[in-house]
Image (cartoon, rainbow, N blue to C red; front, side, top):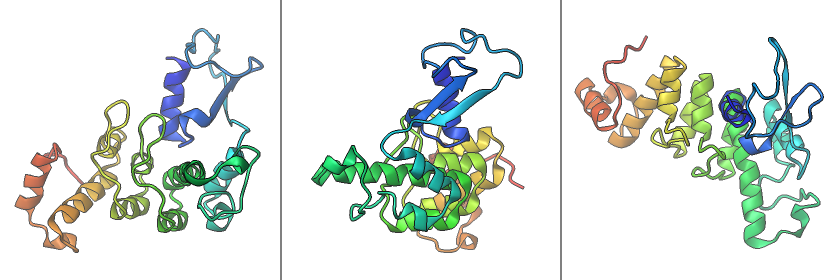
Length: 228
C-alpha cells in the first residue's frame, strides 16, 4: 500500500479530506504520497500520526466541525458574508472569495456528516452549502455518512439534493460504500428516500413493492439484498 492509498482510505474513514492530511511516522517527517508503507520501514504495531496542514485556518475549522458546534462554524469563514479572514484569504474578492468560503463550508459539512452532528449538518445545509462539491478523491458527504451509519444525516443530505448515484474516484457510490461496510440500515434508508423522491411519495408506506423492485432494477440496485 502506498501512502496515497492510505490517505484515500482515511478520507473515508475519518473524513479528513486527502489534501489536508499530513501523515507522520516516528521522526521521519511528512510521509510522501508516492512512497509505500514498506519503504517507510514500519514495524508491527507502529503508529502513524494523522495531522492537519497548518495553513489558511483549516485546523480551526476542522476542530470546530469535529465538535459539531454551529456557533463555532459560523465564525470561521463558511459563508460569503463572514468577517473571518486569514493572511491568504484577506486578498480575495468576488468569485475567489465565494470559492474559498464554499470550499470551507463543504469540508465542514463533510466532517459533520461523518460524525453524525445532525444540527450542524442542518445548519450548514440551510446556509446553502454546495451539493455538487466533492472531496479530492471524489466523495460527497453522503459517502462518509453512509460509511459511518449516520441515518439522520443521510436523510438530511438526500432531502437537500445529494445523490446515491455520485461516484468517487474508485467508482463507489454511497450505496456501494454502505454495502461494503455492511451498513444495511443505511443502504435501505438511501434507497427508500431515492424511490420516494423519484415517485413524489411523501410517506414510504405509499410505495408498492413492485414499484420499489422496478426502481431497484433501473438504478442498478441488487433487489435480492436482505434488510433487517
